Amino acid sequence: MKTVFVCSFLLLLACCIHAQECNCPPGINNDNDGKPLKVFAFSNSHRLGICGYLTVEGADTTYTQFALFDCATGNNVREWSEDKSCKIEKVKDSLFITDIYGLPVGQSFSTIPRPFYVHKFFFKNDEVKEIESFKKGVVRYSHQQIEDAIAEYKKLTQNADEQTIHVANMLFCAYISGSEDAEGYFNSIPGKFGPFDGVLSLEWDNIFTTYQDWKNLNNIK
Image 1 (cartoon, rainbow, N blue to C red):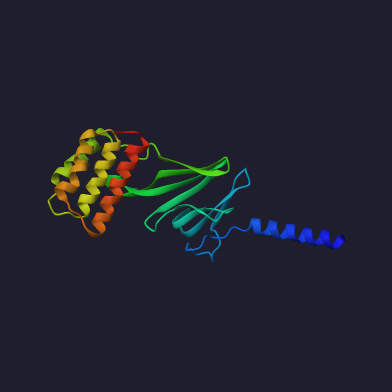
Image 2: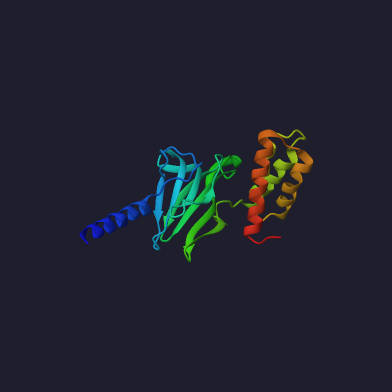
């Protein structure tokens, strides 16, 4: 009887140890020898892990080319590519992963990285749920800045270059600041200054996808 008890105890202990493991899913590269960079525990005993790469600049830590996964199943919840940098924060029983965008909100429309696109993850009935949104107030052009952005658009030449992409970003910011005219000019860019190729094509696609996400999440037709 004692032998049976000891075997049962060891089996239970082995199961508990296995349950506590939280390893990166196969195929996810990282810089932590296959172990998560961070694990977040929730009140229902579920855990979500982060595998990928982190960068520390000053006091800020960002994650890039990473995956969020469920420790219990090993399944990926969502992945971010190498061109994305994110801030990650757990508040109460929700995990917030915020994409950082380079936005023309600095002096003379200089590009500054700002946390902008928010992914909120939480558990409901033991399933991971996600809600997406944009941080309000990150972009707020004045009337004069909107006019200046449109003026820069009107100065563009037919040669597609980085300035065209920069102005597209400015027009997007002017649009979400309330300008329908800026939206019209923004949408005319590929037809008037395209087609884009190479890096410019990727940059335009990123801006246009962000524009579509903004409209969809704000229920704008």
